[in-house]
Length: 202
Image 1 (cartoon, one colour):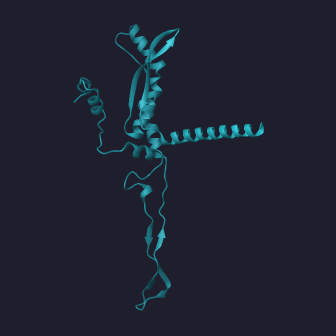
Image 2 (tube, rainbow, N blue to C red):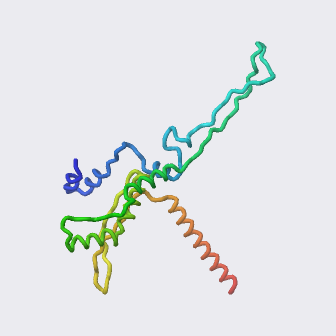
Image 3 (cartoon, rainbow, N blue to C red):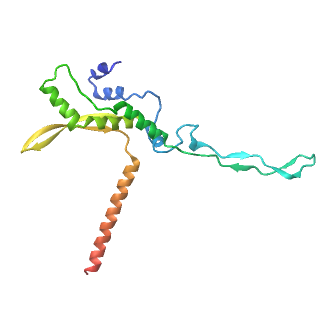
């Protein structure tokens, strides 16, 4: 089924479902994002899953009755777990190859409508940096979506419709945690300042 055939369907939910089919079955985007951020446990051969090795140890001086070296307790050898930042380098390089050059928009008939579209697409929506960001997200999370939506804004007392764009993707847990920590810190400071003021001016 082609994209045009999918978009001709009347059921919007079915359209979204058809466009969201993954190329690899049972793939979790969160696992790929975690791997992009440094986790190395997604694959069975990942460096983060390497187990310590046991090495047989024998005495240099003690012998068994048959003259062979005496077997000692096994020695545990910790394996090397060197985690590199290659996933981020691969994503940055691939995104740069996709959208690294200056974006040009052309048309067979460049009329006023095309010029307005070019202004909105390139300047107001800033699509070139957004497309680079979209590429980085897809390469690190396996899937994302660019959503265009209208908003109304009051200009000189008149409502004007404007086009906005957002990228839908997995929430950044680390950013959310950092934001929550900042909010909690600010709240604690406000509580402390209020208590300090109350105590000082009683």
